Amino acid sequence: MKTKDAVVIITGASDGIGAQLAAQLRRGGARLVLAGRNEAKLQKDASPNDLIVPGDLTQDSDRVALIERAAERFGRIDALINNAGRGSYYRPSEAPIDDARSLFELNFFAPLHLAQLATPLLCQAKGTLVNIGSIASQIAIPWLPVYSASKFALASLTISQRMELRKHGVNVMAVYPGYVTTDFQAHAAGSAPPASVVKGKRFAVTAEQCAAAVIEGMEQRRQLVVTPKIGWSVVWLSRLFPGLVERRMEQV
Ligand SMILES: NC(=O)c1ccc[n+]([C@@H]2O[C@H](COP(=O)([O-])OP(=O)(O)OC[C@H]3O[C@@H](n4cnc5c(N)ncnc54)[C@H](OP(=O)(O)O)[C@@H]3O)[C@@H](O)[C@H]2O)c1
Figure 1 (cartoon, protein in one colour):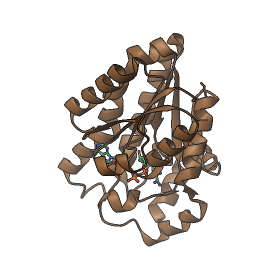
Figure 2: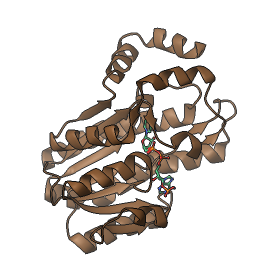
Figure 3: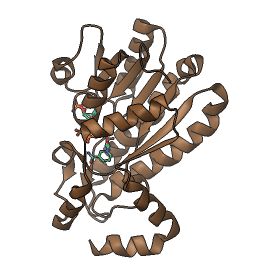
């Protein structure tokens, strides 16, 4: 798809990867709809042409308002980027059930519901649906178990959505970032990850790099973007040698 003049909804546009997606798409001439809870942050770098729809995407009514206001303002939706998400650093045996439910509400049910609401307009535009997953969509992360489960669920949903929407001309793209230098960890619930995880940060990409990879993927109508590219080795290792990866992760 061409992103110039495209109407693009970005959830979680107030921070991190979403804020970078907004900045880069704006520079490329896209017409933006920006969602998140923090209105001041959404406004900070916005242009007067951006539509800002503050809201809590764990709430059905705020999801409905987001898609309705985008449709009202622009009359079309060329792309929906389901990017808002958060982590939760608890062991499986200790994860508070309320936190697990609210995490799924944001990381899984919001992308599902928003895609349902946007589907008629995405089909009309033969547009693009992007679900920001994670390398944790492919390997179970024991220090982020509920997060990882939510991203596995989202990865599976993304494939089903592609099977449904391909015939309507909609490209459905999954994104599996590895470690991205944002405030994700500070915004997560629970305690810090194990110290040895810090080693993985040497392969980190910036939010700018991650956003650029997403936009390139959208423009080339890819089905899957893995960033950084070394993440592909994790994807293939986990598919070919799941037992080995499981035991390795257990030792971290
Ligand atoms: N950083 C990484 O290493 C990494 C790796 C793999 C995948 N990811 C994924 O990339 C996506 C973006 O993460 P990030 O690193 O950019 O995180 P971030 O800096 O913490 O940004 C998260 C965004 O989600 C929004 N958000 C959180 N709760 C929300 C709610 N209830 N309703 C609406 N918006 C909400 C936040 O906005 P408000 O606070 O304004 O609501 C913020 O804009 C997430 O899906 C994450 O799982 C990140």
